[in-house]
Image (tube, rainbow, N blue to C red; front, side, top):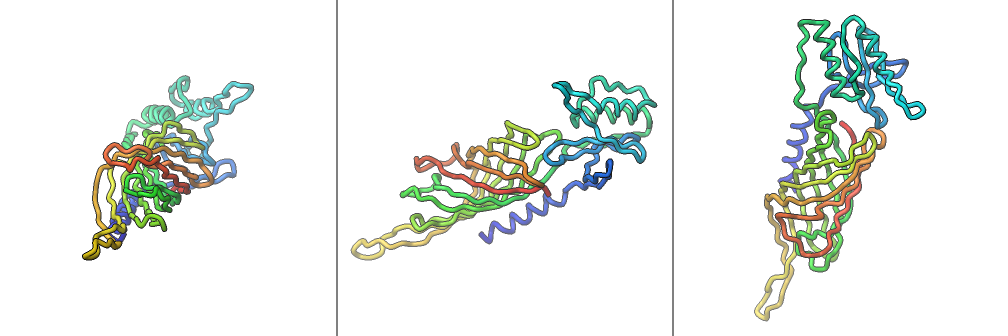
Length: 293
């Protein structure tokens, strides 16, 4: 455990130092913390508010929200009218503009280049968001001996990196997981792992994903029976050790947005390609909450 803690702390601060800043803006009497996507004569601002993507256009000191409400089954595309008004001093078509960040980004860049010959867009290869949370649950540790198939309590911390713009269906997770010994199985483990998640369902309120654990460092401790005397009596002996491997295990999970974070459920390590199980049915469920940093 002590050997894992410095690694986790180092990785946490390494990633946390790159958090992108937000700025407060007041629009129609409402204050928002917004990200700047394009900055120029016409500035594009955005964020997720109560689980919905919200976009704003700023020209001078005027800020207008870009909306696309639905009435009688038809979208009204109010955002196109606002963009036409704000770009009436330059010929930039709004016909094919969609209310998505990539489409709006391209429109704002096109307008700014026409209005300002010195406008130079800073390309963003990534725009990372960070989420930190805790979880708890139960596991039957099928990738260990566990001869009685005993259930054990587990708990830990997730540090997740997501790109909400260009790679919104993908995430990387640094996970610390502690498995506690039970009365029926004297085995405990501290594990630090790297995980990749693909979100096959992605909405502002709900995500469903496949999780792949592809690298793990584990320090474990267990009790085993060893010969203890001349008459072949056996005694319990505590043994411990550490190893680093590439287990390539797969699980599934879901996130549901609540407040500034997500209730998260995981069914972990259902199938393992590079590790041997004890042939028991895998039980590894965790429930937790993570919040946006």
